[in-house]
Image (cartoon, one colour):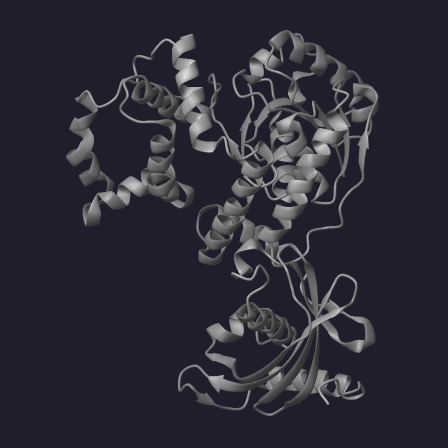
Length: 471
């Protein structure tokens, strides 16, 4: 698959990273002579953060190229993303150039304000043009507001959804054209009120940000607005919430119907406060801080299967599990060490080695049929002993792989050997794990199900010819 990115700024660079790190070839066209350097910086951040969301490797990175023209960039593309500045005349010219050379590619626009009907004015084929409005950083945040017009083909919208989902994005189809779509209209309301709070000396930029990030922002991250308020209504739910708090809408709590004039004085006031809040960090430092926080939050949500974390889990399920490894062992883990696994020494906490080997064991168990359905039926394997030897430091962002071998597999007993290595094959740690099959009803050991027992013994026999690395 190939994506063409027309406009390589912050948003265009984020689009390029999202496609590239999901195995697409990407061609970028941008007149800025600094485009390659700027996109390289975005890619550095994306490569350091996006893989940390997953417990399995993403596809091999696609090929990145920089085109000398729109025509060169879009030729052969499956998806074209227009991300040029917010000037309608400029977008019309670029879209016309794209359509002249892009075959039947989907054409998405990153516009945050224009409607698809406005973009389609004068287009040779409006059926493939739609708004695909992302959120920064595109390589981490999954929401894409997908806005068609009456002239956009339904088949094109379905193709667009399928392609966006294939790279881990969440296409939210906006049912009607409206200026600024959905999310930016909500953000605009908060922004207007924030401007008044600053102008009236009620709060500073940092105090407003603190109110969001330490309070309702975390709730919104995994439940949104209405589900949060439904819970606030207690057992009686949303109806009670509306009955109790609805009258507040007539109270003068906000100034949403009015907005202060953004004078030079107010603009300077905001800038000064923002400098005081964050001026000690560079933009790149702030981006890395943001990315690390998002990785940790999204991974936490993934562990709970909530909000955007559930989307990451579903995307991860599409990546391969166990595969044969060199020497007859099974490759059971292939991943990047995430930020939230680091300890105060700056390397992977020792408890995470146990988690890695536990994850490896789960892959072995799944390969013999002792999977989630088997557990749901009332049986499982419990670890009763594990010995780990730490060979080398393992650090955040490091790519690790685990090869596993069955040392003993008969009756109730399963003994595994795990070897954890880095990308160069250097051994980082080894583990010998002993598991016993149990009934989840009695919580006592018992013989495994017939099919599982047969598969376990077959795997043990296949590994019996291998040398015993634990000796």
